[in-house]
Image 1 (spheres, one colour):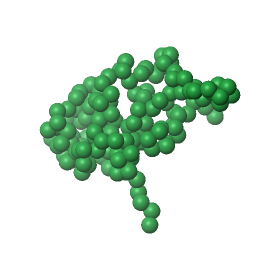
Image 2 (cartoon, helix red, strand yellow):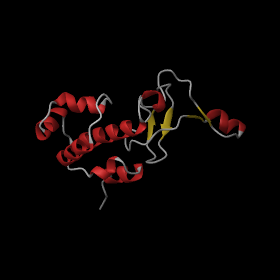
Image 3 (cartoon, helix red, strand yellow):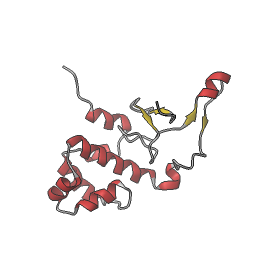
Length: 143
């Protein structure tokens, strides 16, 4: 059993460990870090944690929109089962370009985002939309 605290995403309700970029692994929504144990015991409002040096806040890292779009592109690519190399061949670029996008080192232009989304067969508007719409796109409906 791990000593690391788990966090539930408010948008998609996924229980997970805190991510390095502060976003949900499933839907890309920002995760809020709260202290819940003391709050349950003393019946008070949760307090946001800002002092964990291993997990910097999004504002300290990068523009949250860039982080959200890059994370959602990565989720879409992995959901399709496509590697960086396969995406690079379909797109006509190097595989490192997509790695740099997913690691927030490169910010693609809107026309490039459109081409990437076409290669992934993924609607571009979901990159910027609400987390619940993004998560719903990947949910498999049971018959």
